[in-house]
Picture 1 (cartoon, rainbow, N blue to C red):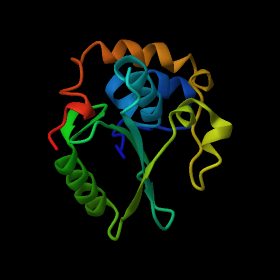
Picture 2 (spheres, rainbow, N blue to C red):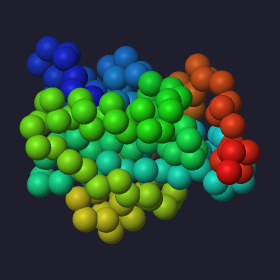
Picture 3 (cartoon, helix red, strand yellow):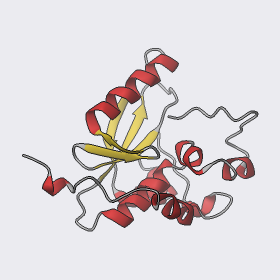
Amino acid sequence: MYQPRTPNYRKSDPVMRWNLPDRIFFACGACHILAHAFIERFDATGELTPIWFHPKDNLPGNHIIVSGGDWVFDYHGYSNHKRFMDHCFRRARQRWPGWDADIIPLPRDVLISEPKSREFDGLWLREPQQFLHDALPRARRFLDRFSSPPRQPSQSAS
């Protein structure tokens, strides 16, 4: 959902994309790789869920985050689930009036499989090796900046 402000930015330029700062790189088309690395590192119980913002009416604004129940994780770090969703929808509607999205839970294996991602209408994810360099080690290093999740979903208050 992030809109790059890098002068002359072109998503089709793999060198330019790879050379973006990490946070922007994972905001601009590699959020699914970061979600996969996060789940790989922090989800021993299988309770975290990748969530896809699927914009309606062919508008831009696809994004993939990880939901841990009352919190979510993306390139910003941890956020309260409700506040994050409200913020994303409000900002997207400022940029694209009338913007709306379906919130779709995804199977984990979709995050790093182009063929499996294409089984979902409107979703087409690159595999980690389809970037200029393998994006998965970069995502794992980026995660070193963050602590463990606030709490596991099974520890959430009922």
